[in-house]
Image (cartoon, rainbow, N blue to C red):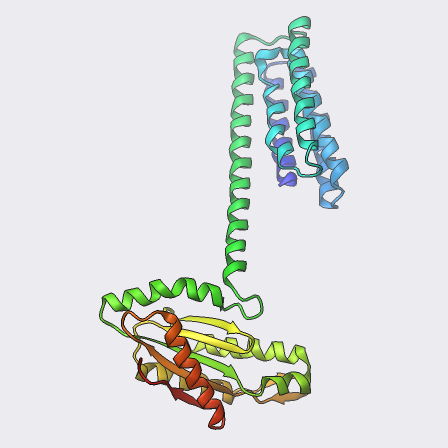
Length: 332
């Protein structure tokens, strides 16, 4: 953001150079070359992440430019407006909690002091009435544009941070699937829509077989890679409207809206077969991975919890019957 501001500010100074040459005020014009040089130096420092000296150069340029412009052309030129641009940047700059407010107070005192100095000295290098109006209008336009740009930038930054927080709160960091809490939050709406249409909803619970043995034999990194491997294969077997989540540890749950028991069983079998057919490559080893799965249909007006309990019970029957299989729970 700071580098963008330096580029925009240097372009503004370049425009001032041309503007003052047009109004036959060469002293005012060539002063902008110094400002452009300061912004170039600040940009170079920012690119190398030498931030404090760069910000000091930016402050020096703006304070100096505002002071010279105001004293030479007069208060009505509008150069003092640029000082106001520092207020939001200073407040959001962080650091010690009192530092931004101290800087704002100092900026206020400088602003009022500049106003008093401009009234006391008068205009040292006056422009024509037309020139003064053009410079004032140009300064107002630049300040409006920069304020709008920085506000939009900070708004975008806040929105991106909000999206990241939502993603962190709703996504399992290892697999990228929904986490348990997010699935529970979304389940009510996912259940209601098929119910209004008179359609069933089913769910599948899957658990990685002998996961402790994988961890013990190959290490926890292999265990994590196994979970990710299964999650990727599981996601490929789901439709866009399905909600796949890491339910906990090595266990996954898939909510299948508008799906009856028979269709859910086919989905579960597809997931089981896909995982069994693709061992995980880990170094020179190929780790065979299988799943045990349980399927349950959610009864009409039944909350998610009892259906999950039935699917979980069916999953454990799959474990007891030899693993790497799908078991369907009875109806509620």
